[in-house]
Amino acid sequence: MTVLDQLPLEPGAYYVMDRGYVDFKRLYRFQTAKAFFVTRAKSNLDFLRRDHRPVDHSTGLRSDTTIVLAGPSTSLFYPEPFRRVGFYDVEHQRKLVFLTNNFELPALTIAQLYRARWRVELFFKWIKQNLHIKRFYGNTENAVKTQVWIAVSVYVLIAIVRKQLRSLRPMSELLQILSLTLFEKIPLNQAFSHIVTPIQEPDRHNQLPLFD
Image 1 (cartoon, rainbow, N blue to C red):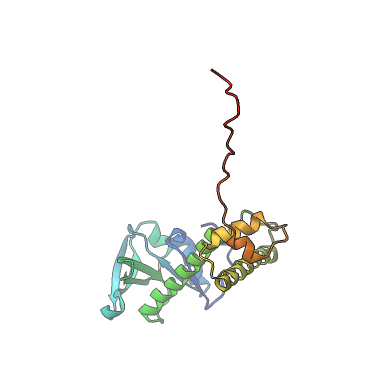
Image 2: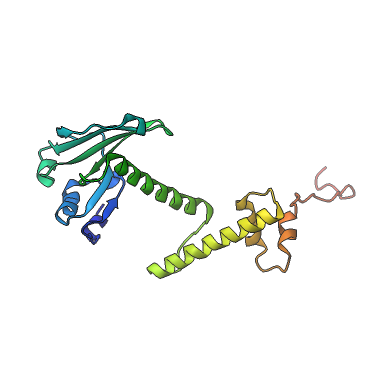
């Protein structure tokens, strides 16, 4: 959460974040900088309704209200009103509540902004699960981006080869085969089509027993 203190805020920009970053003292900094935030509300939010606007329930929207914080501390940290948008996610059958200091955008756009953030998070989850980056060789922004893009490029190239060879092996297995045969001069189609069979112990019927 403390990273919000270091974040340079650009007036007019939108910052979409998870509810783990909800800190009203820090969020008020967005308000004073004339920047906009979109985040999820916590279930224990203490607030008072000031106004409400009609919504189209067929779009998934459930509410669009103007609220003020009622907590003794939070009302001091964020003394101005902001917006609370309720939305029902039909795909995952759950209700989501969003908070924002933007009153101009349609309520559905607020929900779609957060959905776009969720897609970015799913992409990073995919990176962790599929690219298997154990560690970064450099800590600069350019070094990290270079390593991630190289890993993505390798994954895409192997996906193309897998499709051309019509291989039924999962991508994780193909990448593992490549890591084991990295320095061997062998065609990819042979490496990918090779079936690894368990090593069978040779028959040793003539071997004498160690114990009677």
